[in-house]
Length: 154
Image (cartoon, rainbow, N blue to C red; front, side, top):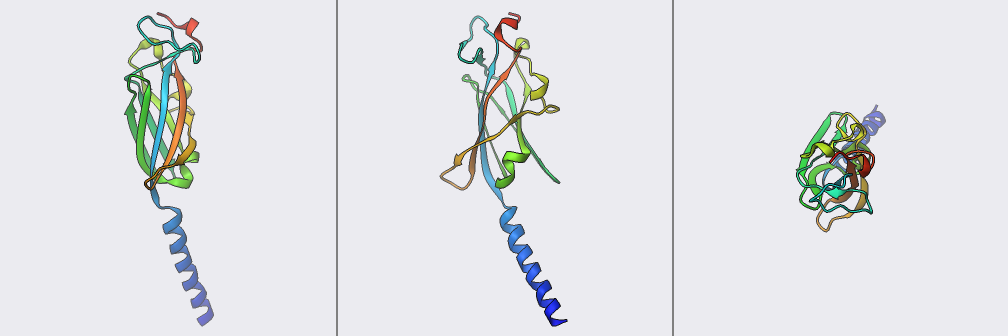
């Protein structure tokens, strides 16, 4: 009986160590660029990506792990850049977090179904550890609008 209690005690202590270190929430920063795949007058069209950066796009980082859910939104600046920060279990962010595009200020730059919250979104790529505690991820270049700029209705 004493051996069983000692074993049970060791398991409880070990479980406490594993759960507290394995599921600790860490600071996480995610960045990305959103471009509209159009060639509209008055916008800085970049032929390398067949689109232009657009400000005012609402991008959303959404994470779902069991009962833990978080969603953080950011709006792109004039260069199409967005950055969001949240707390997340570091080892799960690449598997359970995705960037979606919630809205676009131009009708020509509509959000394709795969980038909506009901779609697959843009997966994250690990970039580096930050100098302070936390990690840095990229959603990369996210293209919205038609399949190519020649299909864009000006």
